[in-house]
Length: 256
Image (cartoon, rainbow, N blue to C red; front, side, top):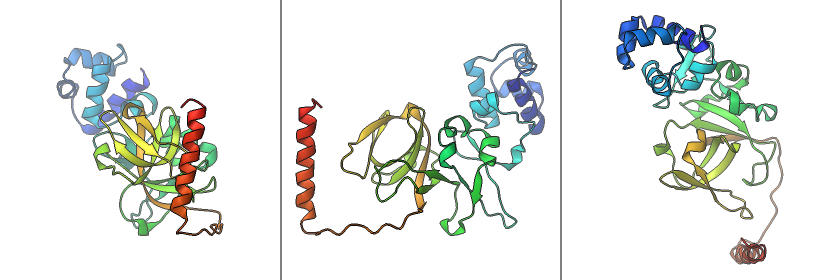
């Protein structure tokens, strides 16, 4: 039997329904369902989608995680995307926040939906942040000052794109870029436009089909205590205009 067939058998048994009932809920004949659960036939995409919706489990988990080894009741179900996020609670029922370290940054793309990967991350508790599923991510580069390479952004999980708002900042996990932290500029039909807070970088679009997860900023953890440079607030708008003009001139020279 395949991992997928083992998983749907585990889930059906836990749901305490017959193969006939599960087949009807997934809109397939019982004999077809039996072959999928028995590992005899490979399931087509339409069945994967149907069974994912029926059991409220993401397809990637059904295909890649052995649910016989995971306490499914300890997973947190979030919204219509059916992604299950593992959580750890203390004796008072407070959620812990997983910390994605810099060394695990690249591995997050393959492990974000794997409960075993998430459960092995270090955890902290920040009860004052309130309710919601939260996770801390490392920040790289200089595009979002004052945050540096030693900063972590704590984000609250966003269940659907309708919740995101212009001018707020988000951790966005994408297939192409991995983990990125940016400010939302606008929402489009098939993409979102994000902008760095550092004016030397330009806004850019992210295809919605490329987005795996979105986490809204709720707090940050820093390891540096740098004093900001002094500047004349009255002259700052003029300086900004000069910089923007210089950047535009440079872009024109290089053909952008």
